[in-house]
Amino acid sequence: MAKTKEQKKNESETTDNPIKKVKTKITSDKKEGIEELKEQLASEKDRVLRLAAEFENYKKRKQRESDEFKKFANETIFRQLLTIVDNLERAIFSTKENSDEAGLLEGVKLTYKEILKLFETFNVKPVEAENQMFDPNFHQAITQVKTDEFPENSVTAVLQKGYLLHDRLIRPAMVIVSKRVEEETKETKEN
Image 1 (cartoon, helix red, strand yellow):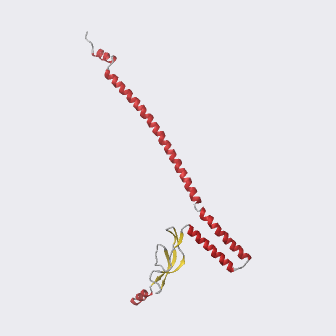
Image 2 (image 1 turned 30 degrees about the vertical axis):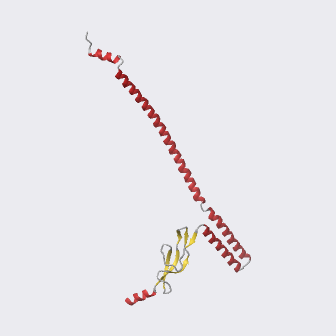
Image 3 (image 1 turned 180 degrees about the vertical axis):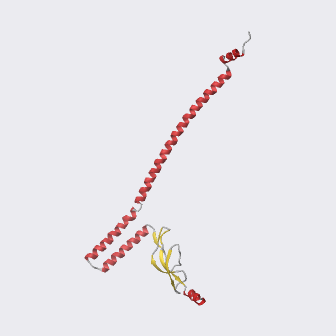
């Protein structure tokens, strides 16, 4: 009796087909691999979240440290300024009790020396300006004076000292700058 196509198909499905076994094995291996990859992905997500949280905590801690540093950065200079304030208070008190002008002057000079020592400690230096060539990077010209005693564009007088903190200008020197007299006479002759 001849078998129909359907019967042959059903028989082939029920018998142990080696190709079908390989396909089933590959499919189960894929499923295991997918499950393993899912576990790895979850593990990596967890690790990334923990690293992100750690980094946020680090940023907050550094910000707190920075804020605290800024808050107390000038503590040392103010401690040293306190002794200067104490000396000025003593000078004021002593003049109230005793009107000794020489003593007051001496007290002010000593206080001035202490301030200069404090400046030196923190690397604050005066800007050299007297008899120097005018430099707009360090000097602020207030006015010009016509003179033949100084070379043109040189500082003839310092009205207020300038200061550097390390190598940074914190205040320019206010100066008077020389201008040649003969240039003006030439200009007036031409007019």
